[in-house]
Length: 119
Length: 113
Image (cartoon, rainbow over all chains, first blue to last red):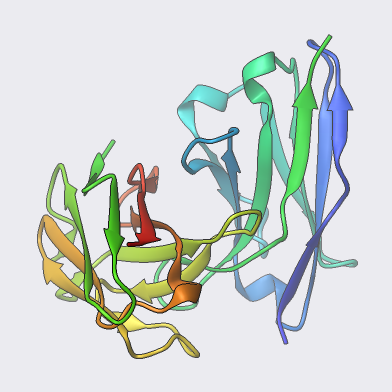
């Protein structure tokens, strides 16, 4: 069975960085990309970017360019997302999700990581 | 970016009745080379991550009850719950994955009347 298990909640001060992990299991990690989506409190879903797990190629949302880096570790089948220069409006639940084999819908999601940015 | 717009923002339906959610894209998400609509529907219950229900606009994900169905083409799409159950209370999101960035609608909240 496919599982994506994310790291625990984080509290950060403005200007700091956060690096979240997404440990995958139950499928061929190299065959499917990983995407990151965030959800601010009471708001909808915002795509942040994705990474090709096989070759590491990335594509980031324009508004996050320069602040976000997505990486993978194929030896541990884990994906990472680092967000720098945190602001209060980065407070959100951050989800990783696996790209489906049928197009690029997001078929399996992690449980989410709460990131709170507050002074 | 392609804008996805839900209607209504919320609806209340009696148990056992039909719930219909509409989603309109700002441009066609029908890919001519494969004749597929690059639209997915997700269900999100409070405190949980989204769950994929429908992809290619009308293909039900494995394990999803058959009371959920998707339809539409081009720019207009619909998610129908044929007989609302208590466990279907959630926010439903449409998403296009036709072009990057993939974008979500603002969501429709479904409640019991």
